[in-house]
Length: 294
Ligand SMILES: [Zn+2]
Image 1 (cartoon, rainbow, N blue to C red):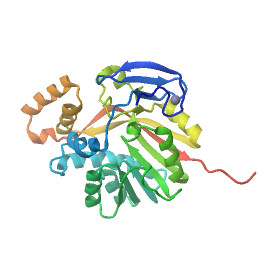
Image 2: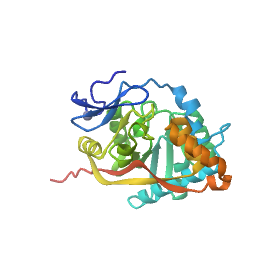
Image 3: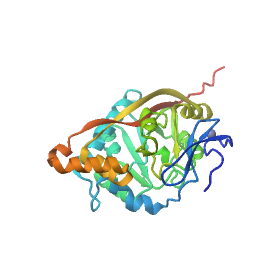
């Protein structure tokens, strides 16, 4: 699909930013500042079912223990942060993958629901978290009760959504008044992107749209949300996981360097967690309550 108009605001005035290594252009919308790929590469359901979690080091549907630990450590930071705004209630994670967030949100005392496109991921998430409700599908195919969630969480998700306008409409409908959205997504205006250019880790074929701060502000005004907080975050990773990621997504020179380092380090050292600024931002947004009083 060759997208000439902005998939978020429908604006037709765009500027060219760069050509990505796989051939698509990255355009910037002059109205809402959304950075979007044009044309979108064609990715089907199979892509998310079969290949997607190879980069997580998954073998025969089993995630290595060190990957579980690092995923949960990263998610725990977000859950603790969300709990500062809303400490109990119903949480929906959109794009729940294998359920690391669901697990720590359950431990924190929330009622949790997860939805994911990948059947394989949903099966693992459900097995790991029997107390969670896990549903396979998208917000377009699964009908949840309107205004039924206190918190909607999404990490590394919105950049995969081909129709972000419809998506925002759907999640705002599902959120209760005063509810919180916590979103983690790559920020194309982060210094790591300026530094790495086309080798930026987030320029993957499946990342279609990027939301810098200005765009999220635009979303808030359009959909009746309060912009509460914006911060750049660091993610914990380990050498073994980072190596699997760079092998699949590049850049090749970095993958080669890490692979050489891995060969000389003992395995235990490869699994030591360290924080990495990978260019992601976390946004906290709140649905505004409209007072009926004059
Ligand atoms: Zn736009």
